[in-house]
Amino acid sequence: MAVPDSRPDAQRTAAHLTLALVGYFTLVTAVITLSPFDFSPRRFHLHVRFVPSDILANIALFLPLGFLGRGLAGSAARGGRVVLLAAVCSLLIETAQIFIRSRYVSPVDVLSNTCGAWLGVGLRDWLERWSRWHPRLVGRIGLDVPLVGLLYLLVPQLWLSSVGMIEDTHRSVTTLLLGAAGSLVLVALHRHRWLLRGGPAPDEHRFESSTLRRFLPVFALYLTLASLWPPVRAVESWHGAWGFANRLNGAAVADVLILLEQVGGFTLLGYAMAEWRGRRELTLAADLPRVVACALVLSSSLELAQGGLSGPGASALRALLSTVGTAYGAAVYHLARAHVRALRAGDAAAVGEAA
Image (cartoon, rainbow, N blue to C red):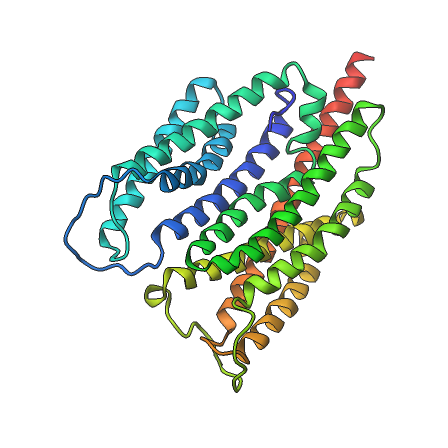
């Protein structure tokens, strides 16, 4: 969110963190819109359909991109460039969908995606203006609290889980679990904000550790169920493959979304694990081996269980992608922590100059 002033170090760390989040959102958006990657020449069809649920979904998909992208634009005039860039990206996606059999091209999608980015930019600008009147409050609930990064990563994860409900309504169970995990973080941040109003800031490490202690069990249950979905399947002799039993360009949309949801879930897990160990003040290089090792054990265990159930079976590549997602989540946390340190160093310098 808003950086309190123009401190060069804080601006640099905020840009690095925002770029990492924008990259993650962009990847998720591309996979969702281009699944199942079944590209082939076909006759061009243009559809103009106004389906309220599709319009709202497309707006929600691009709103975070506009919000985060606005943070990378310096002046207010550059907010228009963010919207234009989002419109170009949406147009490129729609063009690519010409060659996907299960997709259709619609100018309504381009318009709704662009509106989503515009709303995201507008929301960011409103928060920037509001922060001038509440600088202390906004600073404490913005990106300078590392736990907020978890909420940013939860947004596309909730989107993926919700999209999965279209194919299978029973997946509402996993969506509710994920929503419950996110609610625990929101409630803790809200409570922390009100505590800050009454006096000096409490120990944030203790606040975040207690929140993660409640968040992780619920999220672990969600991740297990989502990765092994559907959980109630016939038991078969163990089977698996190094890659995927169904290649991505031959898999159903639901298969691709389940894979992306699992990798995204491990990205969240990596962020939470790195934050859990944040009090040790480890560098990313020192933190990464333990986080990756834990992720490899968990992802391998899930694949071993997957191999004993009916369906495509275990996949070494899926376990590897999940582990890579965990490493990325840990890296995002360390970027968030670097931003916190830059902001607080600037605050200390400002106090010293005032004195």
